[in-house]
Image (tube, rainbow, N blue to C red; front, side, top):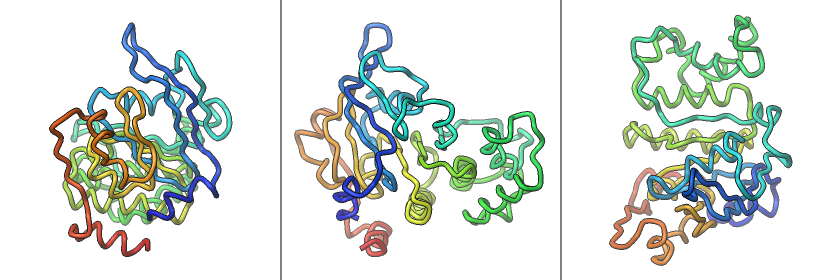
Length: 270
């Protein structure tokens, strides 16, 4: 995995690029002078404290927030509707009404509305595409079940299927492991790695949990209003970087060879 992270920029196209981006709300700067690239086939983790600008950074990449200074390119051009069809977005888990009458299949079909139209009834072809994606994540047997009855881990897998069913080039995730247990988290991140390896998609995901992200990303960007590090996951734990991101007296849980699931993952990718 380390070799992949070091060489990825030498071989791949740039899918998302920010050049000297500044964003502020009222008088407070949320992002200052951000330079960032995400390459084809890369899992980029963005970590930092709450309020550090992570979600705002995603919105800038998606074209939902315009920077006051600097430029943003998505697939080599400014974010636009055409580029939006090539991006799958998974926001933070919402606490939706579990009694809301929507099936697992319905949720995945929502990912095709950008291409089929929101008010157009999904046809046989769309349903076949959605079922194939559910099969891909081992959730086809749950297609007719109510989405609200699923566990947190199952819901997140279905949400990923919804984001991927339109075959985007880039998947953008905001705190994807919130509310799901450790085992489900490991399965979720392994699923992302499989899609990266098999489909060549890129993933940008933000999290406040630096220990988890560094175990599963190809590269990591450490953000607290400014980017204080961007590179190999293992090298982001330098004391001077951690102090700028999280302040002093920080304790970090690091996934290493003694973590069974992490060891298995590195063994599979070596």
